[in-house]
Amino acid sequence: MERRTISRRNFLNLAVGTTAGATLAACGTSGPSGGGGGTGAGAATYWFLTGQPQQGIREDTVKRFNQANANSKITFTEFQNDAYKTKIKTAIGAGQGPTIIWGWGGGGLKSYVEAGQVEDLTSWFAQNSAVKSRLFPSAFGAATVNGKIYAMPAEQVQPIVMFYNKTVLDKVGIQPPQSWGDIMAAVPKINAKGIAPFSLGGQSRWTNMMWLEFLLDRIGGPEVFQAVFEGQKNAWSQPAVMDMLTKTQDLVKANGFIKGFSSITADSNADQALLVTGKAAMMLHGTWTYGTMKQTGGDLVTGGHLGYMNFPPVEGGKGDPSDTVGNPGQYLSISSKATDAQKETAKKFFSTAVLDSAEVKQWIDTGGVPIVSGTESQLASSKDADFLKFVYGVSSKAKVFAQSWDQAMSPTAAEALLDNIAKLFQLSITPQQWIDNMNQVIGQ
Image (cartoon, rainbow, N blue to C red; front, side):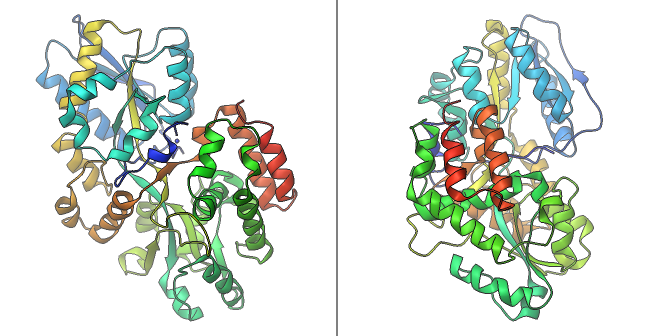
């Protein structure tokens, strides 16, 4: 499954009061496949991922556009997640990519920009302020490289939140943690009941990363990671990083996570199952897991036993507790190799079809929070109104909505990051070794 992605310079601007989101672009079972289409001068192409319900929503948006634009239609081609990642990179590098490029923004977008492969949309957004103003402002952080916008934010928002099983916490006799101190104090009490404090699909590695992302933000604020994005030498050597790593290992050593977490996978939803069945009290995870837990979790969700909250503050930390991390958006870019007519079709698609009223309704109907401001009344009518309003609130109030570190970095640095995070959680390296290892790949 795919989830998550930050432009270096704009990390601090990823949220300025609201934020955009990304869908958990589920791994599809078919592809590539195509649909729609046209052969006129303005006929454009569009590649995106399979996986329902997102796939169907994307298809419908293209079909509505084509019905309204007989002379400038869009042909779409769909790919499974892993196949898409390989195909899109190769095609763009060969100058044979689609007119409209679906992606995750951040580091991947930056590489396209540096190679001159995508259009600068800054002036277009300035001329079409109505398009920009209706979207969450923070969505544009991961669409921006060196102060210029190179992608249209799209789809929905999905922050990482702390879920908890109310029944389990009641059984233990504790309240949801309101600080890092509360978390550490709760661990022995929960363990004493034969229950794991936190579920964790550690084999997937990126699930471990969520803990570091939040801890570093809460301890040092977003400026600490900003230095890493800017490629500053030894940026990981800041005191807040050592504090983050030490606290993480303190939690591991205190048996804060389910036994055997390093062999549990997130893609199989095994971590969610532990929370659902009451074998774990809490879980730090993306809001995309809500739907799965609702479908497979008995009465945990339907019975009102699932709680959720933003990550709590760390005592003495400089970070704003309103900050969040996760998926601030999916992103649509325009190939610089496309013809002028194709580029105009793509821009018309952005301004008239992407996140139009019909698409917004579809995202909400499937349990999502689209990145469009002012949808509170529509969310309130959903069967999952309480949860969706919570997601909207966390996202819209976040002063910084950061995308996942591994999507922000280059593939080389991201792999080193995930590898070292896994070793950190397994207690096979020290915090100082982690820092030394990560400093070596800054800028790679």
